Structures are given as C-alpha cells and as structure tokens.
Image (cartoon, rainbow, N blue to C red; front, top):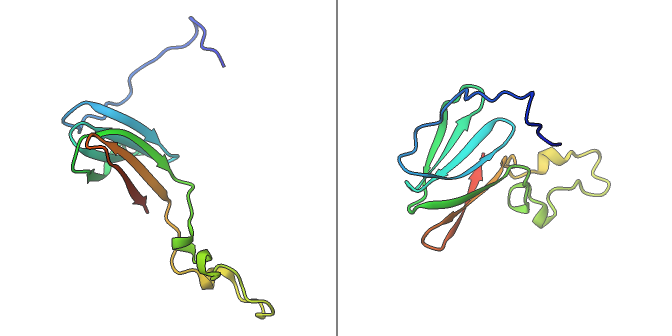
Length: 123
C-alpha cells in the first residue's frame, strides 16, 4: 500500500485532550484507544463515544505503551493445574464449568522513566 500525492484528503475529526503533558505512546484495540503520557497516566478511551473509560496512574512518567489484548494465560484458565480439560470418561463434562474465572481481555505493558515496566491486566 502506497499513499499517492493526490486523491486523499485528511481531516482532523477529534482531539483527545485530557493529558496534562506530552503523549508518549498510543496503542489501540478494536474498541479502545490507549494513550500514555509524561504526566504519569494511561488513559483508556472508547472509540465509539471518544469518552475516557479509565485513567490509570503509573506513579512515574510513562515512556512507552503496548497492549496485548489476545492474551490468555494459565492463571486465569486453570490450565496450569490441568483444570482446563474434561476428565477422561467424564460423561460430557464441559471445559467452561472447570474454569476458575473468565479470562481477561489481555494485558497492557508500559515503560516508566524510573526503569520499571508495569504489567496491567485488562478486563
């Protein structure tokens, strides 16, 4: 895909303006926009209404951001202890009944100026 010099018009349709300092990272999923800032916060925006869904305070300036929404791990599904599978000859027991709780939507990672990387659970 190559953008030609002609034939495309660009128009600013919305300004996300709630951070108090420079934006340092932007990531998105199918339904949300995630922004990080030197103000030490991460904001989660709804892409349908453009409203802030959550404001997270990291405790230091946030320098980068990565969202992994497709992540599912053993901690939430019980597979680490073999609880995610029906027992042999269990008479039709369903996997859903064995789950500890619903899996989260994923995780968000942010790099801070103090040298730490924080991992936040989404969901």
